[in-house]
Image (cartoon, rainbow, N blue to C red; front, side, top):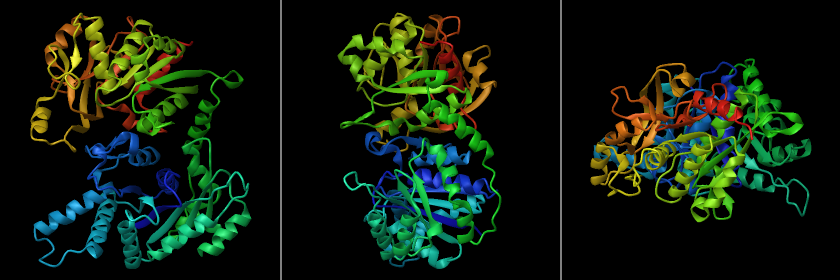
Length: 550
């Protein structure tokens, strides 16, 4: 019988429920338990694929092709394993299934009600995920903030499951403890109110994770304990730390793993976080980039989804950024990371000169026409100036467009995504995607999930992977147009990775004799990079960049 841990957030959003959930999973896995993690998103969207990236952040794709919230990526990275689509649900997905069952008379003609039928469907999915993973413990993150209307049905599901299995369910509340600058004192009242909001839906927190700028002192722990009806030992300090990967170690300082075992009636087991500790020690190096004579690498991420009002939104590319961190830790170098808006290069081509100060340039995935010509100009610049380049999905497609225009002599080359009626669409929509779009099928209809890929011998990609066959995750509608493979190849572009039947070009690169490192992938390698197992292409990119110091 599986045990269940629900993680809900109080006071405000954005305080790290996903990292807390992933950290709990890592802590329990280090004790030898089989753990799986679930994300509940309170959106009406059926999946995350149709959500605006500048509002919701990155869309993370699972191996089975499901488009999910970026927290699923955190779970996979912290647990070091792939998760299936049953581990992600939204309000829309739950209601869709309840309505489907009602239409198919699976409720045997009874009245179908919001309560209990919607929470029961949530519980059914949670238990199915636990069964599929053969998990000892299922950790479930409830999106949103306690007190919101949107997630109340998921909290009701937690209450009902707690009622059914009181000794098998733990409730963890992550709450924010502010220190107002004009007061200079840590205030616990917002956490007290969040606890009462949780009580109002029939739930009592077993453990409170107190997020704050600094560690909680004993007095605040005792105050939270008194007014939130738990023991001071179960108030866990969650201060700001250097890296998200420090969080499991920080939780363990307060004994979170042992407390969870006690709450769930599990025997305490010794934890082994030694490999994690080694990795975390390396991640601190990138924070010290260039200090005390340490070696560093400077990387520019050129994209178009960074700006959200007056703020830089790096969450859009979170898996890419984490994959870079994994790679520099593997290579024992510091990382100096910059986010560059490609639209700036369209306004002022002279700004491209700033790329010379970077060891490497990365262009991540994306959609649409905004900033595209700026990206193409940046790719041309790094190619001509021998700056290490890694292009992901759109970053590969635009690399092909740039090469076609400026090397292969196909002056009007473009992608059909931007100019569908262009004479030379070197990047074109896949035939089956044309059919889907003609029918108006957009959500969940791209080429999604894990697919095999064959690598050509004696190529940069083959050397990086050390294998002739790989499997990577995709999220796209467009591919290299087969009509242009021969002229592009004749001009020197190497398609080093293809689908097993040779019909789809999955990796494009330039030979090392021509460029120190210029490689693009149609797939998203960042989705498979883990702290303890960095992705080989990111490692190869960082290796190439460190050989090309400023």
